Image (cartoon, rainbow, N blue to C red):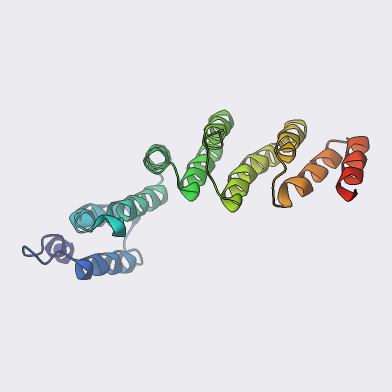
Length: 196
């Protein structure tokens, strides 16, 4: 801890990439021998090193990711959820951050909030690339499958297929959902349309 404190208080003009690298190295090594709460204390000590990095390095964001990870390991699920939501608000154009927050909501079985968040994220003003859009939508479909809510799953997929997505995932999942929902006639019609 003493070395971490020294690293976090470098002489004026010396807080740079070397300290950042050393801070990350120290954290990675400490994670092998310290408990999660001890790593969190170390992380707090090293926060000034992360905060001193230029914006393009995103040291503060990296520090927050470490914090979320070790709070999770320490069993502080409520705090993790709160911080993941804050990350999702702070980085609205980062699909992975949005997905991490929604997956955290699903973990605590707050399905309605997860769906509402994704509906907002995927709203009319959304500008996701094809892969990001598909990944976010797959989070919704996975949520329905895990809850065995096949009727809602099929309805959601029907709406997604109606937007004529570029990837095959929506079409494949829709066909599967129709079959699992015993909508064989609709599945046959869908396949016939697909093959035309």
